[in-house]
Image 1: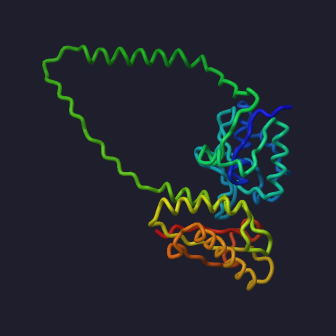
Image 2: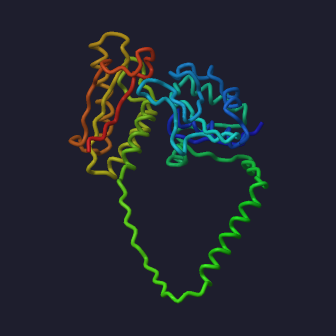
Image 3: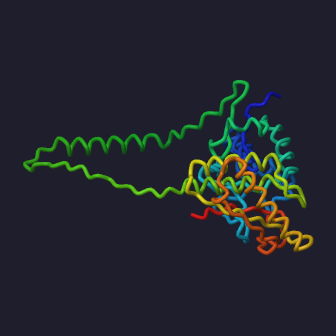
Length: 301
């Protein structure tokens, strides 16, 4: 059967999120139970939490790690009006399984090298409709239409009464200037998103060499640093507690340095960058090594 939706994304976890949004476009009346049947937990055994999907107001883990996509443009809106969050952790094996599962619902995934087409769109992914397919039109709620029209008519009548009512008083309309102060935190959020994508692109076990997916993500970090010339960044590597502590310390430092060296190779001044390895000293969850193997991008100013 021909695919109906193609998902573009720059990282495994964001692409998996796009698959779920594509499913909801195709099945807008689905509930969380339908999602769990369509994409069961068995597809993602290394997710570090109990469920692939939880209600957005729930807390999926007691650890500091958030565990789920909960941004306004990330949560899924169910047919019963409830909002659902999708798990963030997708290893390469789990990602490959969910890509195959998506084909059962006429959803295909573009290769990462084609993902430039969709970066910056909703939730870090974009969707392309294929073979003439378009999302089903939302069901109109006719019962609510009459009260809305009635309220609108009453508002118009009230406004006309106020406008046309005779008055001996001089009406002075004074325009008040609105002053809005906006704190520029956009670039900090972008760095946080890139950190999540970088951690989804895992290092090979016991190695510090950057994977192609990791380099792909660091390209975007270099672009942000170019646009924000005053930004300084510290990259901190962490490992799980498995293996020798001294070797883990050296490995975490080597991984952080590899990321810094890559950014320097892309023209970022080394004086703006710091790196540190903490080995296994700061574990997020002693029972989940995958969560503990991580790299932090810390904005210093």
